[in-house]
Length: 147
Image (cartoon, rainbow, N blue to C red; front, top):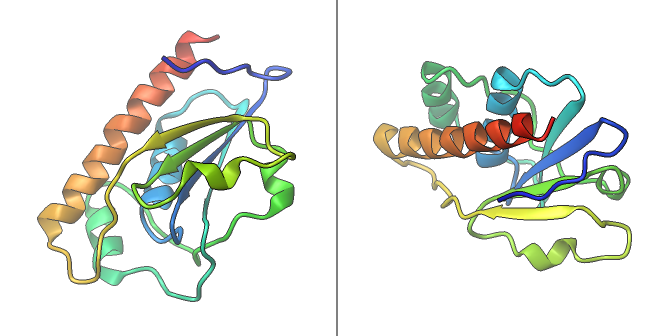
């Protein structure tokens, strides 16, 4: 069960993965597709900033599954963290402890979603997308029940 305090009727959620190239982007995009509460804003970012472009195969498979992946991978600015009510780590390779610092007091949830590697099969990419979609759907339902 998620215990979340929605401040002043508004909420900011941050989806995090290692590089913001796939998992957190899928979660952000799908959340925006199915969420109807305009008082909830979502962002995504990676704990490691890099200049790696999105993987063309992952983008293609995501598009075929109704998820538009676009834009450059983003890091997580400290100023953004100060406004976040809920961090969702959409990764099995991002330690929760990196968000334990004095300026962040929000709730942290970990979804242990395994990373993809270059050259992964279409089937495995689709499995990851569907795994993330299911988790996002559960989250949206929980947030709808908190109204």
